[in-house]
Image (tube, rainbow, N blue to C red; front, side, top):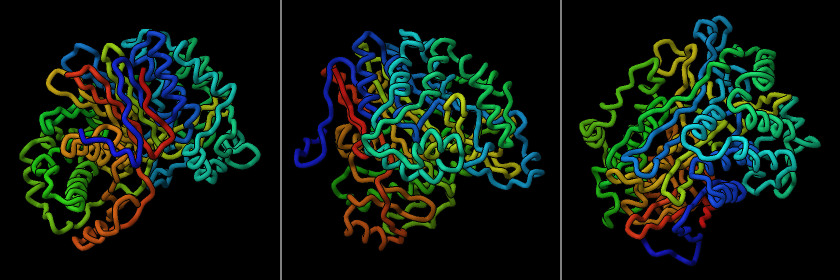
Length: 528
């Protein structure tokens, strides 16, 4: 790893015990408190994520979905959990056609799939935790009931989404007190959500998917014209999956398999593995150009081929084959940009990701999301549960792999990741940011394995994103590099800071954890 530049940025966090990294200091502290009280990585992750569902409500919530990759100490490889929800059983393509709906809009009940997050939390705690879900939800309950102070990035995003929050009367009443978004440092309470968390603590997953909470959510959705039923909620279940992987520079990069877009990151890394990406002969513009061309090819395959494998045959082995990577590289010109492939038109960047490694070296990579900011903008009035808008990922096109069908999971953007070396865990990591996430994963992996950056510097490095016909560059990328890329045929535009990640590297030789946290968010890494 390269030497730290003390003129800017911040240091990675080193520890010989446990470490945690989240998008909010209070959530990171919650995770550390759980570890110090004897909990393991799963316990700490669930407690921290529940906390984030209260204090970072635009990004995540009980009404969203979650995914996890968990590497139990001593196991030869990690396991994955897909806790994404499904479309209502009445959601047929014919129904939407007859209703005159050609595209599922965000602020509608049709955007809401059955939330999978709480199911995922309860399953992880039951199977791999050491503490009760009731104990782990106490910090979140306290924040919801007593109130929490808005962090600066949370307040910024909250204000940006005020127009959306005003569309639903229940959402407006709870999240726009006095008719306006709270500011950084203001205290905000969510008493309805506190009671829902208490119910989940007492009753487990039944406290959410059956009884008053489910009745409140389903009743609200039905009032708005949704197709959801109590049976849809009661029969929801998460799924354990085998992570898929490719080898990059001697390390195995693990992702959740489709219907998630983790496969996109793996396709990109397969492509980039054929270049001496870290060679000093490559300029910054060369690396950004190669990343962009790899992204175009990988996202085109995502949009054409990825769907719920319970409904469609996803050619995973073919997409991750060396032959496919060779074929894509043959079409890449280092000096000229290709015509961009079609990409999904909407940006969704409101998600939260965290990672924890405990003293025994159990490691979890964990992500939870409402998709768009404040999800669908629809809230259960009695439960205080904000509902996600994952259904907007479905296509209403007959024969499309991601066409909506009863009980189907949509193509999912949120992707936790894990790095391994043989049978050893090396680094849980993730980069949130909607469609950007596979590019973010590739940027962190290449930054660390090709450019020898530590986790903190890899997360802080300037970001680019080839998306929807544009090459979007953060302000930290120089005008000279931007001009070089434009000369290669890219449509270069400037973008606000994109994505948000966390990572914890395990230095096996020294038995040391090295943690980094996203500087574009409010959070931090902590250790003990």
